Image (cartoon, rainbow over all chains, first blue to last red; front, top):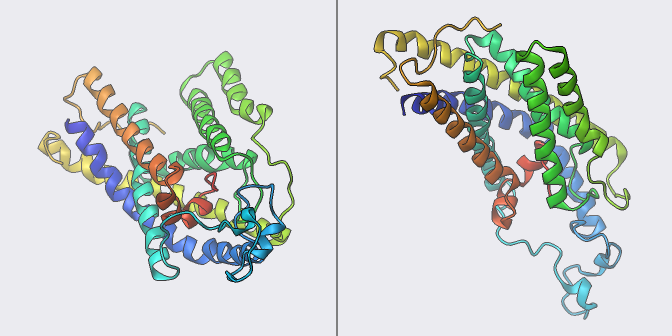
Length: 256
Length: 59
């Protein structure tokens, strides 16, 4: 399992670096917008999980004295454990960034090894662009980044569409990059377009207390932070792998 | 672009190579899936800001 161990080693370092960078960018660019949106969310009354009872939620404030209707009395935020606001919440976000940074790096390193591996930081930047297109751009076209309190279709259906779009786009880009045949390139374009022709699951109503400007700002922030994340991840894989294979040449890849 | 001549595990057979790379990719997808897509409430709440910031389907 030498190869597996080496892939994990490179992915761990590159993912850690890119994850920390992404967490820092999010702290300044996206999280403040999420917190702003949560003010609107609380003013509008809880998460819009069920679009059936939006207005009634006004009544379920802190007043336990007033007997509210059964539906409204059910706390909208009864969602189990959550980190406390402030440092704890930020800490878990950083953790999530690093863990998934390593996860994305594992995928990136493993897939790129099939194509000969990412040899240097510049190749890594191009692989990063591909990762950005596959994991952010393509799914983001149908399902734009959403703030809390924004209406959305059924979660499971959106997750399925998201995953299917990622798979179709990655296969499409792979065919374009590594198969020099016109029919396969046409097939690739069809694969990339197909999820958007089918269409992402949309909510019944687009009514939301979130101002249009805030949402637009968020879409830009999410897209750009993800772009930088993928470029850093790709470049980091290139640098780490370059140093690694440099030493492995003498150590006959027994080194890990 | 594909000028990398050094491979990460030159001595392994091609079948074992395929297996290990697929395994690594699946491990990565599992990690991302668990943090970003799991329906467990505690996991969702812990990574809430992250999920929104990555434009993962949320709520």
